[in-house]
Image (tube, rainbow, N blue to C red; front, side, top):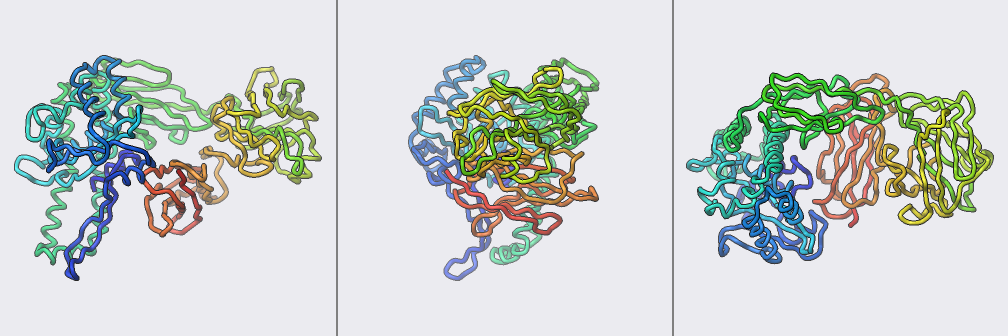
Length: 624
């Protein structure tokens, strides 16, 4: 349970994967055990795709000083620890140096999780951390053995009211070692910026991953896996189902009450005045979402509990086709607030409500989206360029001008480009249609081609204002495959900066994709006004991938009824590894990223089910 919950915080966090199994010894039933992933050098290779030399250390009993080097040695870690002892981390230079030695955000999530879990078999035992054994390798922490957490009773420990935060940031108490085992967190908390980050990150998790509605649902899900077989375990060890249910009740009570106790511990530890209720709203959630400190909020109205005088940061995240307009907020009392760009940084002293207002983006965003500047002789439609309307409204292009370094073309009167549609300007329309046939998108003939070595292309509106421009090149760092091999130059994401070479790629197919979504696309525009015609699963991109890929899918219906969508990843053996999506979805276009870092390389399958019925399966290849 703890490892699954920790992974819910961040899928890249290191856990030990497991599954329940029945164990027999010499034919005799021995009960239900967890078959667990061993954590060693091969574990790092498998989960982090790192095969070179490493330092992999653990604090564990039965070793001198509770210190064991699974791989490498303690030299770098001890030097980092001594730096914390010798230096004040409130000095920005010292804090920046420590960031170059350890993954501070990873450490924070790890420490917060152990505190929330109330794991008392810790600090001097069951700590693991690793780094690439290189000059710039930084430390990351690995979760291991949290059996003594989530309410396991043990003398004065284990209860949900136990102040693990004070213990795990203090200098006295069992396993604290007079502060030796808490030096990193105590040093970090000397830094004013980090203290605010720590408090807000803890609050963010208490309002999301650690919510009882989430944690208890996860516990019940895991319980259901072994529920049908638990009687075999109970019979073997002379226990009753009532014993098991009582233990589950202890866990459930811990998860239900722990958040409020932890909030009180934070108030005491950091001498904070009190709590307040934060409400975030967005009357048009299809227009955008809100980033709150470290978490993304996309369901409104949303409520959470935060700490007075600790500044929170709200950042609007408009969806494609929309822009942020303004913040509207109400508060009982406000210590201070400041606008940093579109972000609102506020320090409430009482209940606080913030509403993000988004509006449609009326600036015409016509994108130079694909360029064919050097076709192959055996597949030659002539030079052409594709324009794309990335807006949610049609744009009149009458008398707009398209230019290269030496020529210009004026788009004819009464030309309207519909939203999410394409226009192609080609060198010779007959040559183009000989290759691609009759099309349903707009085509105009330029009567000129493009420089095969690269040049500046511009699109200007009827007042001469620059709408878009691209200065492409035929040499690195621009993709070189379009140089006569038949591939085109495609913009990977129509919302990215198309002046930057890294945002372009060669087409996956000879001839490119005129009038269609680019084959190199990594982003689909989610616009409820334009509903796809059918349910569809697209090929993941990139493919092959290392270690992250994006899967796009559409939910389409004429009835505008939400559909129950499940998108899951399977291995070559047909075993389900993870469910990426399992919720009702309105008709629209969606995408989700999957990071395979913790899995082995090889073939994986992405399966889309809608309303319990299989729709499609796509195959992806994870390569190092």
